[in-house]
Amino acid sequence: MPLWFEDYLLKNFGAALMGSDFTRMMFTTFVVPKTFLSINMFPDKPGVAPDAIDFIAPFCPRKRLFVVTDGYAIRFCDRITNAFEKRYGFATHLWSGALPEVPLESIDDCVAEMAAFEPDLIMGVGGGSVIDSAKVAWLRYERPDMKKIEEEINPIFPLGLRKKALLAGVPTTSGTGSECSPTAMVTDTAAGMKIAIVHGELIPDFALLDPSLPAAMPPELTAGTGLDVLAHAADAVLCPAANDLTDAIALRAIQMIFKYLPRACRDGRDREARYKMHLASYMAGIVLSQAGSGITHSMGHAVGAVFHIHHGMTVGLMLPYEIEAYSYVSDKYMEICGALGVKARDNRTSLLNLVKKIRALMKEVGVPVSIKGFGVSKKDFDAKFEKLVSLTMSDPANVIPGVYLLTADQYRTIYRHAYTGRDLNLDTAL
Ligand SMILES: [Fe+2]
Image 1: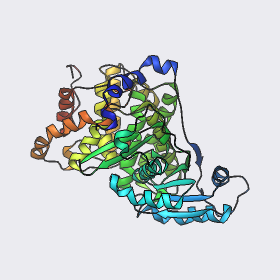
Image 2: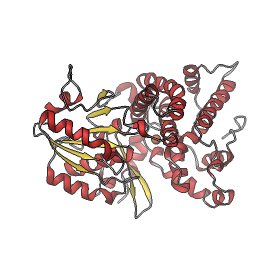
Image 3: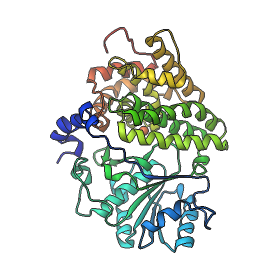
Image 4: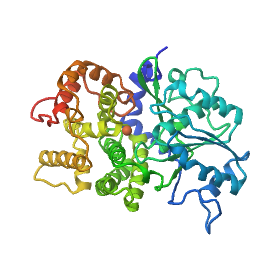
């Protein structure tokens, strides 16, 4: 059976219809979690005003909290479970076995423990992989009849979730936006491929944003996750599924990233920078969910998978190429130029200045601007070149509604430039 995004009807008609101007004019949804932002998100005593816990508790009649986390983020979980236990008498259960990249089989234990505990609130506390693990475990808890979700899920048809529990996301990094997205990235270990599980009902009910949690990220991870945020926001402006709501949020997020990411990388204890980057990450996650992602992600996923490079760094690396490639069909990049105060005598020069500004940001936060810069030899690059192209062509980011579809030859051209970090030749056809 094919994976859900290989379904012929969905791929050829559903995606085109959902990404069309006509459909968006007729029907635009904007679904976001109930959102809380605070530097002391989980106090164990009531404060002077109602807080997130006061708001969430009434939604949980059985008061049973199941926390999904990993070996790193478990350090934050005591104060979370304490707060729910002390203030509202929740019974709590912690599962800390989430793994990077979410191998599908890795959450079998989690699903079994969840089914035995019968929670009415599930909380993912961690980075994107943890929250994605929580999403998939929650989906399997709610729908035990679905044996192979990667084949059976279909974003067009209802799943009927939330009959047993609600979902909350507590990000401990500022990057993936999983706490507000309809996507869970998982890995089919046997097939050696990443699969995006996508459904609107997977958008969490609550997003709890505490900027003190990502404050422990080292500079390299801060830079990588920050560039992921930049790519999400820029994709949301540049992709054809953008709308006025998403533009407003995405452009503001881009301004915040350029101002605060270098500060957060220089000094992880800079509270204002951490706060703003955590919020920007959430804002970019919202618009990513609405407007989709572009070739930053289809190409970035492939580069990351083949050469084992951090996701955020690969999508940041591909962002200048997305801007250049999409400039053949749209001048939407001028809105990013406007938000960042990039001015020039004509659009072409503005575009080149914008690309320079992005690469300058990457250099400032210590991220290479070419595939070669990550230590990939030319021999290795050439040997894996066609694999890169085929992974890019089959990436879910190529079928999620609202993307510009490129040909394999166009991807080859971009990859050849990206190896050394050269700009595309905009005077010739891509
Ligand atoms: Fe991303």
